[in-house]
Length: 141
Image 1 (tube, one colour):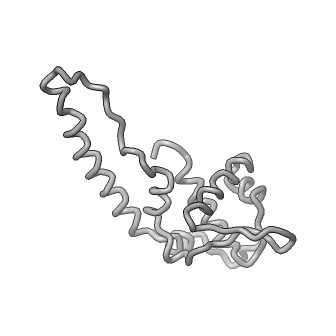
Image 2 (spheres, one colour; image 1 turned 90 degrees about the vertical axis):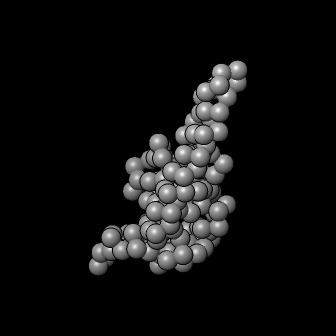
């Protein structure tokens, strides 16, 4: 997780969960994260495409969780970001070298194990549990 997308997606989801009874805009979310609203809209699209977040347009519009926060795991968020990507990059080895010929295949076993360990750990953390860390008596805009 060498970029900010994971933290950004989690931040968005916690805000939507915490302010679920209020209308929040991408501008409000961007202000909390301290990023450009375009970044927030791009990440909201990823969450919508994954079936985790949805939105309602118009005066009564806003963002809302499509799933219960107790059903959303950090592993799901990690997989949105890393779909189709390997945990680490491989070299373009020399196929004529007895070591280079099999290096990437052997590294794949290690990388796959690390990836499964990360996802298993993150699947134990739900948005509901994490969001509780930010509960205050007055989550209003």
